[in-house]
Length: 229
Image (cartoon, rainbow, N blue to C red; front, side, top):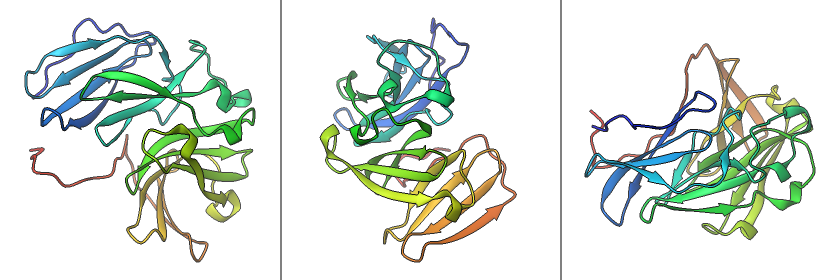
Protein backbone atom coordinates (compact mmCIF):
# COMPACT_ATOMS: atom_id res chain seq x y z
CA UNK A 1 0.00 0.00 0.00
CA UNK A 2 1.04 3.62 -0.50
CA UNK A 3 1.97 5.91 2.35
CA UNK A 4 0.61 9.44 2.75
CA UNK A 5 2.51 12.25 0.94
CA UNK A 6 4.32 14.50 3.43
CA UNK A 7 4.86 18.26 3.28
CA UNK A 8 2.48 18.83 0.40
CA UNK A 9 1.16 22.35 0.91
CA UNK A 10 -2.46 22.84 -0.05
CA UNK A 11 -3.39 26.17 -1.61
CA UNK A 12 -6.32 25.98 -2.12
CA UNK A 13 -6.78 23.20 0.48
CA UNK A 14 -7.38 20.39 -1.95
CA UNK A 15 -5.41 17.34 -3.04
CA UNK A 16 -6.06 15.18 -6.06
CA UNK A 17 -4.68 11.76 -6.94
CA UNK A 18 -4.30 9.68 -10.05
CA UNK A 19 -2.84 6.26 -10.71
CA UNK A 20 -0.75 4.76 -13.53
CA UNK A 21 1.77 2.19 -14.66
CA UNK A 22 5.48 2.74 -15.35
CA UNK A 23 6.45 0.13 -17.94
CA UNK A 24 10.17 0.98 -17.71
CA UNK A 25 10.31 -0.33 -14.13
CA UNK A 26 7.25 -2.61 -14.26
CA UNK A 27 5.61 -0.89 -11.31
CA UNK A 28 2.53 1.14 -10.46
CA UNK A 29 2.71 4.76 -9.33
CA UNK A 30 0.41 7.25 -7.62
CA UNK A 31 0.56 10.94 -8.52
CA UNK A 32 -0.61 13.43 -5.87
CA UNK A 33 -0.99 17.07 -6.76
CA UNK A 34 -2.22 20.36 -5.40
CA UNK A 35 -2.44 23.59 -7.39
CA UNK A 36 1.33 24.18 -7.33
CA UNK A 37 3.00 20.92 -6.31
CA UNK A 38 3.28 17.38 -7.61
CA UNK A 39 4.59 14.24 -5.89
CA UNK A 40 4.97 10.71 -7.23
CA UNK A 41 5.09 7.49 -5.22
CA UNK A 42 6.14 4.11 -6.61
CA UNK A 43 4.63 0.87 -5.34
CA UNK A 44 8.13 -0.59 -5.52
CA UNK A 45 9.78 1.60 -2.85
CA UNK A 46 6.77 3.42 -1.28
CA UNK A 47 8.72 6.70 -1.34
CA UNK A 48 7.15 10.03 -2.33
CA UNK A 49 9.33 12.13 -4.67
CA UNK A 50 8.92 15.82 -5.48
CA UNK A 51 8.49 16.69 -9.15
CA UNK A 52 10.03 19.97 -10.27
CA UNK A 53 6.96 21.92 -11.34
CA UNK A 54 6.60 25.50 -12.57
CA UNK A 55 2.97 25.79 -13.62
CA UNK A 56 -0.38 26.20 -11.88
CA UNK A 57 -2.84 23.30 -11.97
CA UNK A 58 -6.50 24.24 -12.32
CA UNK A 59 -8.32 22.69 -9.37
CA UNK A 60 -11.45 24.79 -9.98
CA UNK A 61 -12.30 22.72 -13.04
CA UNK A 62 -14.68 19.91 -12.09
CA UNK A 63 -13.16 17.24 -14.33
CA UNK A 64 -9.44 17.69 -13.70
CA UNK A 65 -8.50 14.58 -11.74
CA UNK A 66 -5.83 13.48 -14.20
CA UNK A 67 -6.15 10.72 -16.80
CA UNK A 68 -3.68 7.94 -17.62
CA UNK A 69 -2.64 6.76 -21.10
CA UNK A 70 0.45 4.87 -22.31
CA UNK A 71 2.62 5.52 -19.27
CA UNK A 72 1.65 9.20 -19.07
CA UNK A 73 -0.70 11.20 -16.83
CA UNK A 74 -2.49 14.26 -18.21
CA UNK A 75 -4.30 17.17 -16.56
CA UNK A 76 -5.13 20.86 -17.11
CA UNK A 77 -3.01 23.82 -16.04
CA UNK A 78 -2.95 27.58 -16.53
CA UNK A 79 -0.07 28.96 -18.65
CA UNK A 80 -0.53 32.37 -17.01
CA UNK A 81 0.03 30.92 -13.52
CA UNK A 82 -3.25 32.31 -12.26
CA UNK A 83 -5.66 30.59 -9.88
CA UNK A 84 -8.61 32.60 -11.18
CA UNK A 85 -11.26 30.62 -13.00
CA UNK A 86 -14.43 32.17 -14.35
CA UNK A 87 -16.66 29.94 -16.45
CA UNK A 88 -18.46 32.96 -17.89
CA UNK A 89 -15.53 34.29 -19.92
CA UNK A 90 -13.17 31.32 -19.88
CA UNK A 91 -11.46 30.56 -23.22
CA UNK A 92 -9.20 27.76 -24.39
CA UNK A 93 -6.32 30.26 -24.52
CA UNK A 94 -6.26 30.13 -20.72
CA UNK A 95 -5.80 26.38 -20.77
CA UNK A 96 -2.80 24.10 -21.17
CA UNK A 97 -2.46 20.32 -20.86
CA UNK A 98 0.38 18.96 -18.73
CA UNK A 99 1.68 15.45 -19.47
CA UNK A 100 3.78 13.67 -16.86
CA UNK A 101 5.85 10.72 -18.10
CA UNK A 102 5.81 8.15 -15.29
CA UNK A 103 9.10 6.54 -16.42
CA UNK A 104 11.20 9.75 -16.45
CA UNK A 105 8.94 11.68 -14.02
CA UNK A 106 9.40 14.71 -16.28
CA UNK A 107 6.48 16.79 -17.50
CA UNK A 108 5.87 18.48 -20.84
CA UNK A 109 3.21 20.91 -22.03
CA UNK A 110 0.63 20.36 -24.74
CA UNK A 111 -1.85 22.79 -26.25
CA UNK A 112 -5.56 21.97 -26.52
CA UNK A 113 -7.13 22.11 -30.01
CA UNK A 114 -6.29 25.52 -31.45
CA UNK A 115 -9.44 25.55 -33.59
CA UNK A 116 -11.39 26.72 -30.56
CA UNK A 117 -9.08 29.65 -29.70
CA UNK A 118 -10.83 32.63 -28.14
CA UNK A 119 -14.20 30.85 -28.16
CA UNK A 120 -15.77 30.61 -24.69
CA UNK A 121 -15.78 26.99 -23.61
CA UNK A 122 -17.31 25.51 -20.46
CA UNK A 123 -17.22 22.15 -18.70
CA UNK A 124 -13.96 21.10 -20.32
CA UNK A 125 -12.50 17.69 -19.50
CA UNK A 126 -9.85 15.17 -20.46
CA UNK A 127 -10.72 11.53 -21.01
CA UNK A 128 -9.36 8.41 -22.68
CA UNK A 129 -11.66 6.84 -25.27
CA UNK A 130 -10.50 3.74 -27.17
CA UNK A 131 -6.85 4.37 -26.21
CA UNK A 132 -6.81 7.96 -27.39
CA UNK A 133 -6.56 11.16 -25.37
CA UNK A 134 -9.74 13.21 -25.75
CA UNK A 135 -10.56 16.83 -24.93
CA UNK A 136 -14.25 17.64 -24.53
CA UNK A 137 -16.17 20.81 -23.77
CA UNK A 138 -19.52 22.53 -24.05
CA UNK A 139 -19.65 25.08 -26.86
CA UNK A 140 -21.93 28.07 -26.29
CA UNK A 141 -24.25 25.81 -24.27
CA UNK A 142 -25.44 24.43 -27.61
CA UNK A 143 -23.06 21.59 -28.50
CA UNK A 144 -21.05 18.99 -26.66
CA UNK A 145 -17.77 18.64 -28.58
CA UNK A 146 -15.15 15.88 -28.31
CA UNK A 147 -11.66 16.14 -29.86
CA UNK A 148 -9.26 13.21 -30.25
CA UNK A 149 -5.46 13.30 -30.31
CA UNK A 150 -4.88 10.87 -33.17
CA UNK A 151 -1.09 10.71 -32.70
CA UNK A 152 0.18 10.08 -29.17
CA UNK A 153 1.71 13.24 -27.67
CA UNK A 154 1.39 15.30 -30.89
CA UNK A 155 -0.71 18.42 -30.24
CA UNK A 156 -1.03 19.13 -33.98
CA UNK A 157 -3.01 15.88 -34.35
CA UNK A 158 -6.16 17.08 -32.51
CA UNK A 159 -9.16 16.10 -34.64
CA UNK A 160 -12.81 16.87 -33.94
CA UNK A 161 -14.39 13.51 -33.25
CA UNK A 162 -17.93 14.41 -32.16
CA UNK A 163 -20.20 17.44 -32.11
CA UNK A 164 -23.51 16.59 -30.49
CA UNK A 165 -26.43 18.96 -30.11
CA UNK A 166 -27.36 19.47 -26.46
CA UNK A 167 -30.98 19.32 -27.59
CA UNK A 168 -30.38 15.69 -28.55
CA UNK A 169 -28.63 14.95 -25.25
CA UNK A 170 -31.35 16.74 -23.26
CA UNK A 171 -28.52 18.17 -21.16
CA UNK A 172 -26.00 21.00 -21.47
CA UNK A 173 -23.98 20.96 -18.26
CA UNK A 174 -21.58 18.70 -16.34
CA UNK A 175 -21.12 16.00 -18.96
CA UNK A 176 -18.13 13.69 -18.81
CA UNK A 177 -17.34 11.07 -21.50
CA UNK A 178 -16.54 7.80 -19.76
CA UNK A 179 -16.42 5.11 -22.41
CA UNK A 180 -16.75 4.49 -26.14
CA UNK A 181 -17.96 1.05 -27.20
CA UNK A 182 -15.62 -1.27 -29.10
CA UNK A 183 -17.52 -0.78 -32.33
CA UNK A 184 -17.43 3.01 -31.83
CA UNK A 185 -21.22 3.32 -32.04
CA UNK A 186 -22.12 4.11 -28.41
CA UNK A 187 -20.73 6.83 -26.15
CA UNK A 188 -21.39 6.62 -22.40
CA UNK A 189 -21.60 9.99 -20.65
CA UNK A 190 -21.80 10.74 -16.94
CA UNK A 191 -24.03 13.61 -15.85
CA UNK A 192 -22.78 15.00 -12.57
CA UNK A 193 -25.33 16.90 -10.53
CA UNK A 194 -28.30 15.08 -12.05
CA UNK A 195 -27.07 11.57 -11.21
CA UNK A 196 -27.82 10.37 -14.73
CA UNK A 197 -26.03 8.14 -17.22
CA UNK A 198 -26.51 8.83 -20.93
CA UNK A 199 -25.96 6.23 -23.63
CA UNK A 200 -25.67 8.07 -26.94
CA UNK A 201 -25.88 6.07 -30.16
CA UNK A 202 -23.73 7.92 -32.70
CA UNK A 203 -25.12 6.16 -35.76
CA UNK A 204 -28.80 6.57 -34.93
CA UNK A 205 -28.50 9.85 -32.99
CA UNK A 206 -30.47 8.15 -30.22
CA UNK A 207 -30.27 8.81 -26.47
CA UNK A 208 -31.02 6.46 -23.60
CA UNK A 209 -30.97 7.86 -20.08
CA UNK A 210 -30.70 5.99 -16.81
CA UNK A 211 -31.30 7.89 -13.56
CA UNK A 212 -30.94 7.38 -9.84
CA UNK A 213 -27.17 6.86 -9.55
CA UNK A 214 -25.06 8.53 -6.87
CA UNK A 215 -21.28 8.79 -6.99
CA UNK A 216 -18.32 10.97 -6.11
CA UNK A 217 -16.32 9.92 -9.13
CA UNK A 218 -16.29 7.26 -11.81
CA UNK A 219 -13.54 5.79 -13.98
CA UNK A 220 -13.38 3.14 -16.64
CA UNK A 221 -11.86 -0.23 -15.74
CA UNK A 222 -9.00 -2.01 -17.50
CA UNK A 223 -8.23 -5.59 -16.48
CA UNK A 224 -4.62 -6.29 -15.43
CA UNK A 225 -2.59 -8.87 -13.52
CA UNK A 226 -2.50 -6.68 -10.42
CA UNK A 227 -5.17 -7.37 -7.82
CA UNK A 228 -6.74 -4.28 -6.26
CA UNK A 229 -7.98 -6.27 -3.23
